[in-house]
Amino acid sequence: MSKMNEIYRTPLALLTDLYQLTMAYGYWKTGRSEQRSIFHLFFRKNPFEGGYTIAAGLQAVVDYLRDFQFSKDDVEFLSTLTGNDGQVLFDPDFLDYLKELKFTCDVDAVPEGTVMFPHQPLVRVEGPILQCQMIETALLNMINFQSLIATKAARIVSATGGEPVLEFGLRRAQGIDGALAASRAAYIGGCEATSNVLAGKLFGIPVKGTHAHSWVMSFESEEEAFKNYAEAMPNNCVFLVDTYDTLEGVQKAIHVGEKLRETGHRMVGIRLDSGDLAHLSIQARKLLDDAGFEDAAIVASNDLNEDIIADLKEQGAKISVWGVGTKLVTAYDQPALGGVYKLAAMENSDGSWSMKVKLSEQAIKTSIPGKLQVRRYIENDKAVADMIFNQLEAEPEAAILVDPSNSEIKKKASLHWQAEDLLIPVIRNGEVLSYEDDLSEIRQRVFDQLKLFNYGLKKNKPSESYLAGLEEGLHRLKAEIIEKARQGEVE
Image (tube, rainbow, N blue to C red):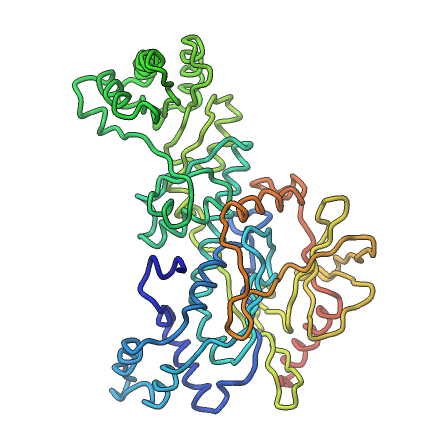
């Protein structure tokens, strides 16, 4: 059973914007619903002013497309919609068509956990234009958010220097769906566990948590609270020590920790949730070490993000586990990735293809034509460049890569470089191919992928860039189409 079936009503065909359905109706009405087309889902700018983006959310897309259909209730609802003249919006024959509609497109995508760059397709959809169009909104919803959160998590994990990060964001997340998707994506991005028990059940993510301030406040004394918690859960003792005086709380946790030892258990650690975390962690570490609790962890929380973590580490904080919530699961400083989904080619009646480009006064918003693939070049276990190329054209023997934002920047691909094409087949003619659903493997892919790139690119404020360019022939094709369009010669 897919995760979509476990979480939501199915099918989810109505998880779309109305204009997708009005365009679908237009394609059907004009007899073009079956015209083959190619769309790409991509983003234009890395989030958080960073140097990379982690692709995530593909499993949700696969589940959604596997179950795609319009139910009887869906069609009945659509029959109630009216236009501005009060008349029904959709012809009953079109609604009958939707009832029988089966998803028959081909879908290629980069595996979740892949490091990606602007303008590179994360997903490519090829098939009847009505179907390709109709799924746009849902795919963007699923890929945009999870990619954003996975990237945020990877940045936070990088800031800790590999120390464990726990995702604590459920209570501040953007609703139930936002919480579940964020927990999954945060784990992909490198978090070790979540506080979200439902996410643990659905996705197999480790769950962690102990007690809150209310537990301490419900007893006459802090030490009594710790003692009772230790008696109730001797194998899960991380004591929250800042309800009153933090360092006194550490001393009381130590007293209870000593009692735990006598019963054959151990205090896992303490948690700091307020105050000067650097100073308090340094003092707490000394108290713990002097009492023989050198292995006790110091967990810190309190509206942390990658910048605050980096600052705490510069101050010499003795924190060994980081609990990050609000600013991770809400992507607090940039709440949207801004991915888009654009038509890139349409098949003609003679089997040839017409290339399509979306023009804009802003160069960054001009799309790329063709049937796109991304090739990553590797030399000595390091990524040296990426190339976006058009699979509708013959591959060049000696590829030259052109920076999409500055055509003066070029690089010739060496024949000695290893090459890997990133988009892989996921669905063929509507049928889902073998696809992994092991989050641990996806999470490991993130670590493996990030090792391919230089430290300067991975810094939270990157000090170097990476060439993710267009194959020179594709760059030239795009320029020619733009010039023709400006002269009114669009195909």
